[in-house]
Length: 366
Ligand code: UD1
Ligand code: UDP
Image 1 (cartoon, rainbow, N blue to C red):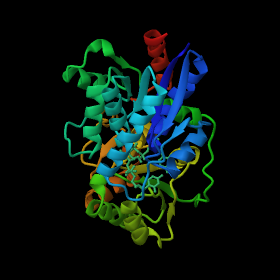
Image 2: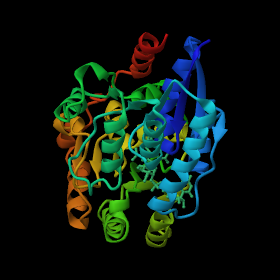
Image 3: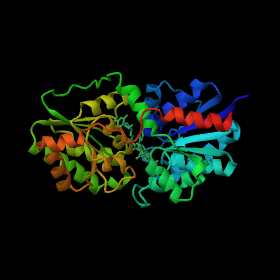
Image 4: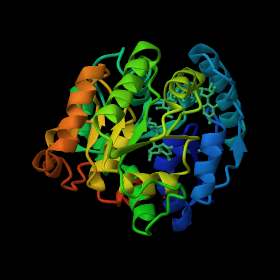
């Protein structure tokens, strides 16, 4: 009888980053692979799963409008425990640092089920930034018995926390597997852009940026549009009301701003490919854009992903209006500076992370 591996996903980035792992596990036929969707995200996640041809075996339909962290955590823990009770997996896999991942790890701990952490070892060292993700990944890492670290830096972070060396595997980040599976097929954006303008792609959703920081970011975009009449902004807006209620009133009427619903993964990859540069507080975008040769200015004050910064292809610009405007303007105005940031390096993976993870699991469980 093949052993059961339960793969849990809950939000958009988890679906993108777990899809290559789930597909590789299913392709090897050595395991009974079950997919649990907590649906911490509803619409955004369903679209991503469909994009990779994945149909979850279990759906907890957890999302509520404007959900609180405590309410979300409580509902997840109760429901995941119930699933573990009837699925009885040999191992559970989850990726990253969302509330879904933290509660999956805790539920496994309470049931004495082995938990494997994909994208293990990312740290800023500051539990307030990003909030609550830094604490989520510390908890998940403490409870995991298998750690799939994307980079040597992540492996070193785990070793510093006394995680045993022989439970850590450096695999690369599975997001690069997902990205290459789409980017190599000339994806289409499906939105009419002004071909004479340079495209600035923007995303924002971090909780630390709600309120004043997000208003500052939108203010910076308006100032950039005023200073550079050859740019157009594409901003797929996260459905969180804390984001929409700021972004739409501030930017909706500008003729060179396109605000859209979150894009499906294929058109979003096309948007990154078409962009001149990207402004984002996203984790995944910091990993993907360098591999596509696109500069990213990160709308945060710290990052758990230092490798692309060290390579000089991603820069932290924070959330102050004048700092963002100056940093973007320099890149738009100075071709040499732009070229230095648009080199196309991939510090986060080579597209073969999922197969490395499957190899470890075969050795461990078969
Ligand atoms: C969550 C993760 C964050 C991750 C992000 C990826 C936590 C605490 N946060 O943040 O780490 O970077 O996902 O996008 O786990 N909503 C919808 N439809 C959707 C998704 C969200 O309407 O498909 C709205 C709902 O009102 C929901 C709210 O957004 O209550 C917040 O969703 P939640 O998952 O709690 O937080 P995110 O900010 O999306
Ligand atoms: N993404 C997408 N559509 C969008 C915006 C982002 O498919 O409209 C993808 C992006 O390519 C990346 C992932 O979503 O792989 C990042 O998710 P998000 O920024 O929501 O979360 P984070 O990575 O910050 O946890």
